[in-house]
Image (cartoon, rainbow, N blue to C red; front, side):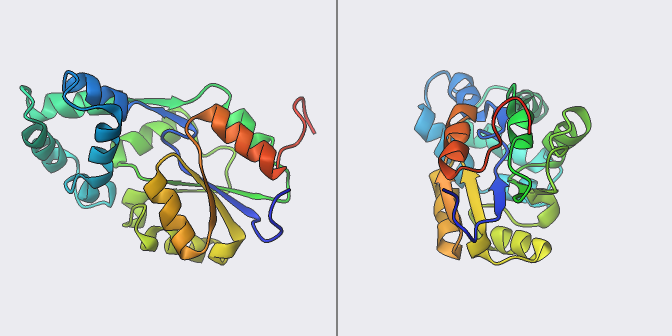
Length: 209
């Protein structure tokens, strides 16, 4: 059963609701020099992505430093075009799954993202449609797993961390939520998210309310 106080369900976007292929894409781009876990850790720890995802860079500096760090034989602009193409939009059925959450729960997104990807997710794919709020790191000025990102969301929603259950595919972000007092579940992809929501007993039966 769902925890009594966890009335806000907070969702990461990429890797949970959205088909973000940055990890597998980086493995391919580096021609196998990076394994899957190494690529995932690169995105979590690469210093130059932080300004891009917190509103301090339009992507030019991020792309330049990425090409240099990865020793890629391509221009920063070419890398940025490849990077942008790794964001494929919501998984099929993702938004419909969110719409099945019982009315008593608040549905919210918190995503580490950037101006280019976010514009596509909102304008082209309407990721925000089934949610009460959708928070983007580049607009918040803070990114997960930094505590400030979670605090800002709680403040905006007027809730305590203990009232939030968070879903993310990165263990570092799950640990960051736990550290602030949220309950949290690591999920990778839509099937694991569905299983987690079923386990929490927050879904209406399939086929309508």
